[in-house]
Image (cartoon, rainbow, N blue to C red; front, side, top):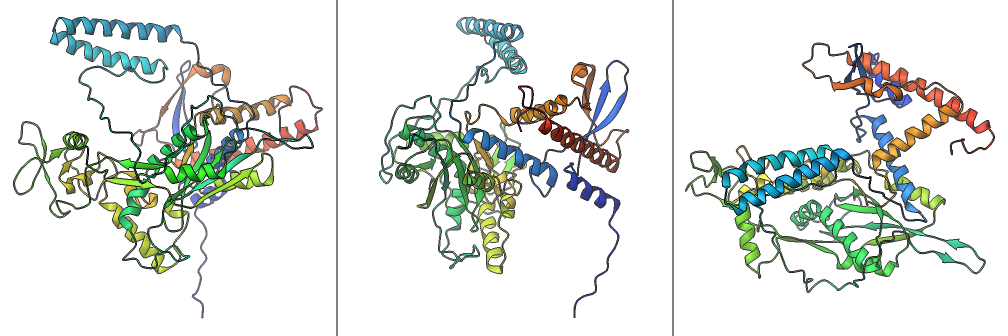
Length: 544
C-alpha cells in the first residue's frame, strides 16, 4: 500500500526560479545601484551571482561550465604558439615607479646614516607607494623592505627511492610535433591524461574499503591535502623531461573512494612511456613539523595568554609558551638528517590517450573534462550504501584534526603555535577548505590552466564571447540594449546595495526582471543568428 500524496501549488518564488532555470537566467541575482552622475538618478539593477556550483545557482554554474569548455577547446590543438604581448607602460605607471625609486634611494641614504626614525617613515611611505603601483595596473609587486626572513634552502638531491629523470633545457615553444603519413596528410595529435593517487587499501565497487580497520585514512587525508603541490611538481618535471613548455587544461575530481585524481588535456603528444616515467618519479616532500602523535587533546588544548609581553599560546598546565612556527622550521632546516613530515606520490595507474582535433573523441574528452565542475567534490559520487557513507564519515574524521596549512589551528595539538597565531584558534574547527566535507581534503582550485594555454584568461574569453554576440546583432542592425551603453560608460557609477540600505529592492522583482531580460536577449540573438546564416559570406560576417 503506497503512502498518500498531497499535491500543493508551488510558491511564486519557486515558479520564478523554475522559469529562470528554463531560460538560463540567474536564480539568485545580486542587486547593485547604478547612479547617473549627470542627473543623480538611482536605479537598482540585477546582475548574475556568478556561482560555479549547481547547488547554488544551476544557470550560472552551467554558464561557467560552458565557458570553461570553450577555454579548453580553444587551446588544446593550437598549431602556433599564442602570442602574449605586454602593454606599454603608461605615463601614470612610469611616474609612480619613479616616485617609488626615489623613496628607495632615500631609504638607502637613511640606512647609511643610521637614521632609524627616517627609515621607519620611509618604510611607511614605501608601503603606500607599493599600493599605488598595484593600483596603477602593474603586475607583480615591489616588496617593501624592512626585516626579511632568509629563505630556507634544502638539498635538491632526489630521494634514493625515486627514479631519475631526463633533464633537458626547456625551449620556449608550446606546440607539439606533427606527423606526416605516406599519402601526404599531416596530423598534430594532442594528449588526454589521467593521474591518480596510490591505493590505501582494497576497495569494493561502491567506494567502500574491504577492511576499514586496515585502510590508511591518515595517508589518504594527507595525500588529498597536498595533491595540488604534487600536480605542480609533475608539470615542472614533465617540462624538463620533454624539453619544451608543455601546456595543459586540467580538472580535479574525486574517485568513488574519495581520493582526488587529475584529468588533463595536454597540448601536443608525449610518449606514453615517458609520461608514466615522469609520474612514477614525481613526488612532493612536506617539510612541516612532525605531526604523527598529538601532544594535547582536543578537550584540553593550549590556551591563549594575553598577560605576557607578547601574547602567545601556552601549555594549559605549566604555562610554558608553545614553540613558534618559524623556530620549529629553523630547527628542521638545521637538522640535515630530519625526514620530511610527509611524502606524497602518484599511484601506478596512468591513463594516456592520443586525441586528434575536430574529432568525436576530442569532444567526448572535453565534455568529460568539465563534467563535474558544477558539483562539489562530495557530490560527484553520491555514496549509495551504508558502508560507503561510513567510509566518507571516517575520511572526514581523519581530516578534522589534520593540519592543512601553516596557519591551521590543528598545530596546537602538536605543541606548535601556528604561523601568525592569534586568539580564538580552536583545534578541529579550522576554516580551511580542506577540512570541509564537500572538499574531501582537497583545498586547491578545481580547474587548472597553464598560462600559455590559449593566450587569454577566463575574463578575456568571456569578453570574446560577448563581442561575438554583439557583432552578430550588429550585422543585422539589431538594437542592443545594455545596462550601461558603451558610449556612456563614464556617465554612470556603480555601488553594491547592502542589506542595511533602506532602499533594498524586492528580490522576487529582481528575479522577474532578469527572466524577462534573458528571454528578450535570447530571442533577439537567435533571430539575428538565423538572419546571419542566410547572408552571403563576407569578411564582416561573424564566424558560427
